[in-house]
Image (tube, rainbow, N blue to C red; front, side):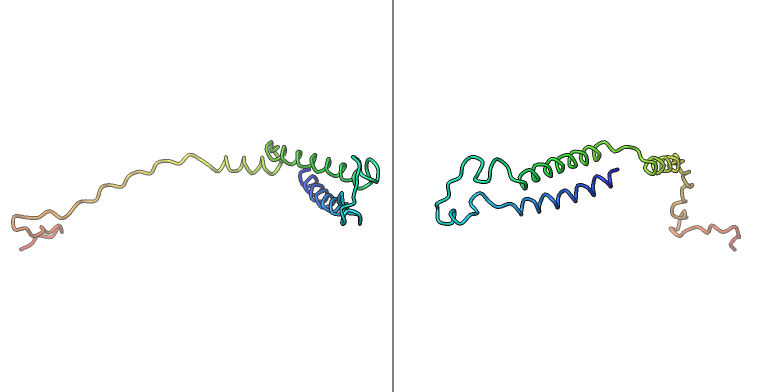
Length: 126
């Protein structure tokens, strides 16, 4: 559904840009170039032209698709793939057991009265 709304939104954006660019400005006639333009409230062509009505319709569609996309971004529904992926992650995340600490290593070799290290091998010295 979101892919359809996104595609529709892009198409409506392009149409809205084209419709706005096709319209002539308020003073687009030759008389406006020399300062002799006098326009009424609705202009010389009447209350609304075809492009004006089309702009209104396309702008309303643009607003509706924008609101729909923003609502769906905030309130993400659970999809089949999204729910399954989250469940798989939760199953894999097992509690970690603390590791047993290794026996402390014996420090430096004990020294005798002479300051030399004593032999630690089981053989007797002569």
